[in-house]
Length: 369
Ligand SMILES: N[C@@H](CCC(=O)N[C@@H](CS)C(=O)NCC(=O)O)C(=O)O
Ligand SMILES: [Fe+2]
Image 1 (spheres, rainbow, N blue to C red):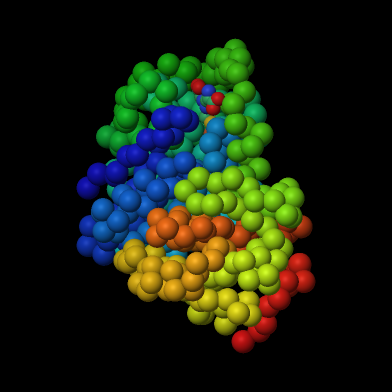
Image 2 (image 1 turned 90 degrees about the vertical axis):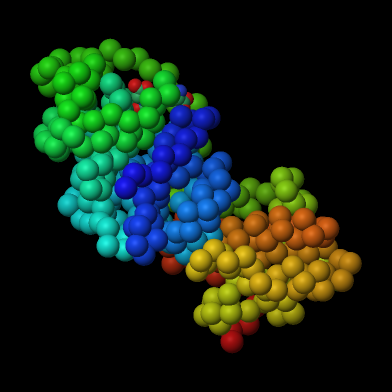
């Protein structure tokens, strides 16, 4: 059984998919925002059902697709407890295991690149994030990095795994795909044969340029990649989007609905609406891609009938499924808009769990039951 290794060229990031061959339950490690469609496609092709979406750390160079993947697949988000990813459903501690089917993934706290960084052991494989790279290691010059801690994580945690363990890194900038603990212990240019003081000197001398996207990536990754942009979008404007007519604020969407210009299609499930609240007059057409990633029965006919020649504005819980639904409605020839942030969005509760209902909060119409 081998992990499936996927690559994002722009950030040289590796994403990994592991599946239990019997139950087809799977985990994904370090998915990248720009690769969401590819990853959903791979999940469908592999016929697996995603159970856990796991981060090795809060990345500085790219944005995770964790929140979006969770919304598409129903999987749970997981992050190391020391990484400050407040939105992750499970906060992992050292030594904790995650089960998927009959398989299990072991979390090892390996601080140094960041204070919370973790590596994950599965069978005779280790996913090292940016702790151990091939013939290298993660930098330690920002985000709570520590060369002393990294030295201990490398020599006292990772290098104590069996030599035959396959090393799957979080990045490689030279096209290499895997290594082994034995090889890295013997020949890793930064750490092999060095004392802690020598390693610290090597790390201090690196002088690497700051990652291009750090200022945007770190805050987004602290909320699993969710960004609540509606707060910054002028209420009356349509924001240009790719694959559908555009993004609109809840207020503009509601103005269109009231004037008869648009019809509102709520793509949350019945259970979500019953639990959180209904939008009066909205057409309910659940956008579901799980279990089994079945495509949305009834959506195509339903949305065309509801539109009856008008614009369609699509609403979900947090503004992820509504984008997928807006793209599908566009393919069907409709003028379809995504409502930013969804039903629960609330820019004042940025990225926190237990958000107030955005529609309630904004004084937009809704009703319970
Ligand atoms: N050039 C890349 C930055 C690459 C980078 O700094 N990568 C981090 C991982 S997030 C690292 O630890 N690199 C180690 C190294 O290059 O030795 C960018 O602008 O995003
Ligand atoms: Fe990193």
